[in-house]
Image 1: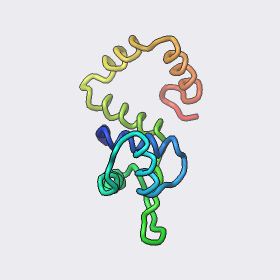
Image 2 (image 1 turned 90 degrees about the vertical axis):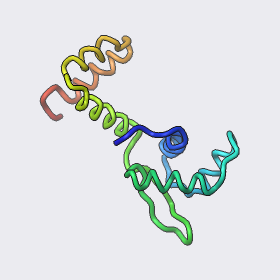
Image 3 (image 1 turned 120 degrees about the vertical axis):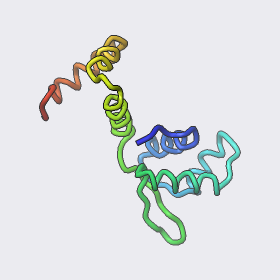
Image 4 (image 1 turned 45 degrees about the horizontal axis):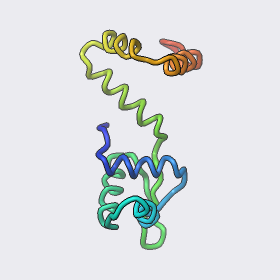
Length: 122
């Protein structure tokens, strides 16, 4: 899984925050509140996001209706996992990561570890 490009990130953010299926036209209308953008550009990016496995789609009349495959949090977790796997030294990477957590992030990490303890499943 790779990081999202600028427009991909904007579209996925809209899809995640909307929490509902949407057509290309729906997204174009939303995006045009902030910028001028072509329908075909949004259509191409949404098709790419479908190909990458981030959006699923079904036909509705002549249009596709898209929805997210997973949550924003699940996407971020997968990116983190892949970066950790590619780091070369997972333990050192985790130490550097933990050193940089602010108190709120550390509290969130502790809460997560209470739900899923190291080496185990809930």
